[in-house]
Length: 147
Length: 122
Image (cartoon, rainbow over all chains, first blue to last red; front, top):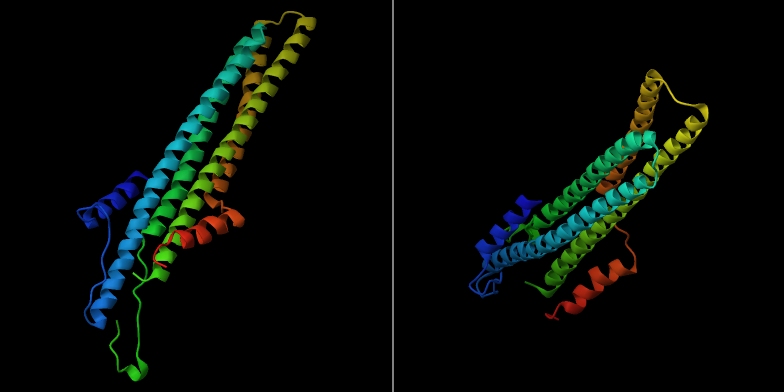
């Protein structure tokens, strides 16, 4: 997800004005110029949106990472506490091995879930980065130019 | 940009934000479910060993070979449970990548109503 965020932020910085806002005012001009301006404004709006979305994605991503880390630590300490309730010699050997294996797997599973989320979120951000198709206007009998 | 297009962009952004947040919530829920499954499997293993230990106390001391065989059996038992837990985790990870957030009233409110109300170009 990091590379996508950088891409959006770089693109936003490139297009931002002095006030840091991405905007393009609609001026006069002929029909073709206005159409081009509209198209550019639409693309800027998409990048603007993607910039906001990337920020949200970054925030959600950070919260999830912390929650997952907390969950893994909490579960591991609970398993260790549980293990201490038993005192038999056999349990000490096999039980410790079980605690170690389950803790490792739980960490791996949580990491896999986190990656799965990242994959899905990246797909979402990439979709939002795509600019809309240019609008084409035709006049009757092909007299007008295609924009 | 025309007001209609402005509203469309806001709505599209709100929908993406909504989906992302829902996705994170779902992932968190899946992780909690995994935690509960892992804990239950671990408790079962400990309880099984405890029961076995109580039984062996009645039977009497084991020879070195018997103890080795028992340890191997215990290891195999744990590995089976861990393997099962891995399979469940794989399916849950697939579920995360194919998850689609629900489209209820909250979705309508956040992605349609709020962008419309926020759009000051009207």
